[in-house]
Image (tube, rainbow, N blue to C red; front, top):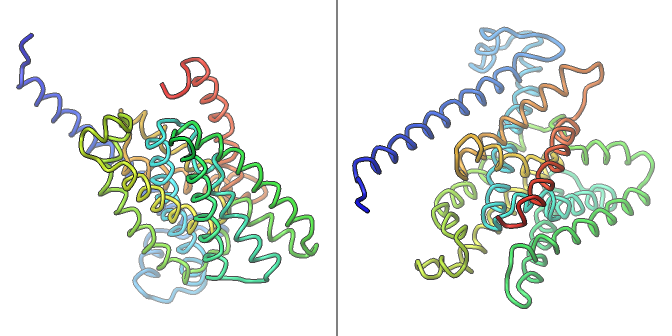
Length: 341
């Protein structure tokens, strides 16, 4: 059978142009939602006023609301969404299963245990909470990975172990809340809901560095990630050091998830939803696409929670309501076609 190279190149360039258009559209939506985060709230501020404040001019009332509340809220939503989106997609592609999200296999919950222990038992705050969440997340992820290596690594085994660890971490959280002083419990529940309220501007620079550093590592290794989708045997045949690549991707993803969780609390289902939605739009897995979708979901969820109800709801409650039906649909689809297909 004769292969027409012109048709192959035409198809390649057509898909490339389509993907560039998708990135431009997703970026435009993300920027539009970011602008709405600055405009909407208890008081409506027009774009010229926002530009004056961002340019350093002091505007009575608006400067405090925009610079102290809305700007850190918007920036944290974007960065956490990007981090959770790219990390969730990495796990799902690497393990070839849409259920292999850090939300579901216990890594996010592990970070939450560390953060809650610091807040409720050690009375820590600020960077110490972040460090605790990070260390606990890394420890939980390492244990899950090490246990999944026993008798040979497999994605299904890692997911099952992760679900078990998720249940254990949930029990520890319940115990910590049960033993916590009554006056600390409302704050703990607000944090566990995943909330952009109360994020300080001082938290943004380090969050930005973490997202840039570990996000760049994942982007640079994306071609190896796609090869891992073919299976370990094929990847090894193609010269990929599967163990090294897998460890680098897991460590980078866990850093992104753990640090993001320490800043805003666990925002439900962003890691789980971003990859599959991006894949449907893109036609294939994409780290850039899933990160942009993650940012869009976080900001859209926050705008809905803050502006469409009589009571202001944390973004994690909105994303939880969106993610639960999607999780059920994914389980039904997997049951129909069989796991790992």
